Length: 265
Length: 215
Ligand SMILES: Nc1ncnc2c1ncn2[C@@H]1O[C@H](COP(=O)(O)OP(=O)(O)OP(=O)(O)O)[C@@H](O)[C@H]1O
Ligand SMILES: [Mg+2]
Image (cartoon, rainbow over all chains, first blue to last red):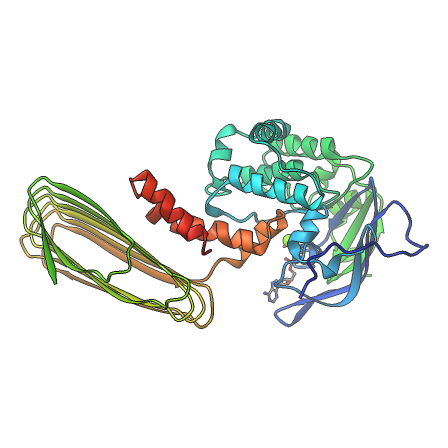
């Protein structure tokens, strides 16, 4: 089983100080089918990496594997977060270490209120970092501040987690939770899909405001438009379980124009 | 079987959580209201083996009946609930919410009978039985039985037995909650409509504490 204790950093000289995430030859299966077929990716603090690629290529699988979804089996490879072996940690420990996933399809949890859920989440993370729990007042202040960041309606907090939220509201709610948890690595899986034009701008602004020199993001998208707002340092193409091309933000424009077919040749 | 009469216009609200098996028929006179909360919560040490029988008969028109039942069983606990709601007179309503949460090798059984007599028009009768199995070895048996002889009535029943939703658990883990915490929140949410409808605040708190001690 997973060790519950904190995992000590690996001591290697080759590990650059500002490397946040290192994925090496990652292979993963679900239902006996190999989906990731050797992914290599290094992300440094302060960077934004966009991942594009055809439907079914394995983009969401990569997010699921990085965040420890137990439905997937890693068959080969390594993942290091700030020098710690990510694959040895249970999902909640990865989250407490600062890995955040904005789900492509956020889950509705009837009967569990947003406020209560976030209170537990934030305090769990704080406990892991050795910080005391927030008082009720501090917590509410934090909620208010972060809600403003994504211009989220007040009423949503009194509801159950994502229950009856519109598609766009769910995506906003993901970014709100990201703001609450202040992750070091956020993976945004098609956060732009389902957002109207204003919401896209608001959510992107929120993400940009949360950007620091210490954290990094992986932005999975099908549309170049999002990358006008959240400007990536790198654009990767994931196809058939591998990263088949890496370029600058201009690559996204090229993909928009030509599709993915030309990469095969 | 014990018979208990509820007089015309009377309202009775019962919260039952002792360990005595119930074997009662409640006979309701016109415009009376009966609310029953039944809790069967596993105890350390002594395995459960209880059969509850709860019959309701509407002897006058315009009666209301609400039945809420929660079974929280584990180990080798066994419990069965048999409800029979007889709408012999018209304009009555009945609503039943029956939930079992079964862990380990616990076994649960729900037999829910509803009858609506031929001249009992304008009756609304609902029955819902939802169950959670927390292990592969827990067993739930459900048997709803409706006999409707009147034509101007609304009657519905639904039964489902499932497990805790894995995608919800993972979502919560992704937000820093351990699986155990996630499980607790999901179980509390599942039980809410039975627990939260207990009107007596002190009793509700006692029950919540007893439940929290277990989940
Ligand atoms: N339980 C499963 N059993 C078998 N194959 C699965 C299972 N779940 C997902 N897959 C397959 O894994 C592949 C990768 O899916 P994934 O969701 O990672 O794609 P994606 O790149 O995110 O696609 P999209 O752009 O449509 O979101 C798909 O072909 C999908 O059908
Ligand atoms: Mg996807």
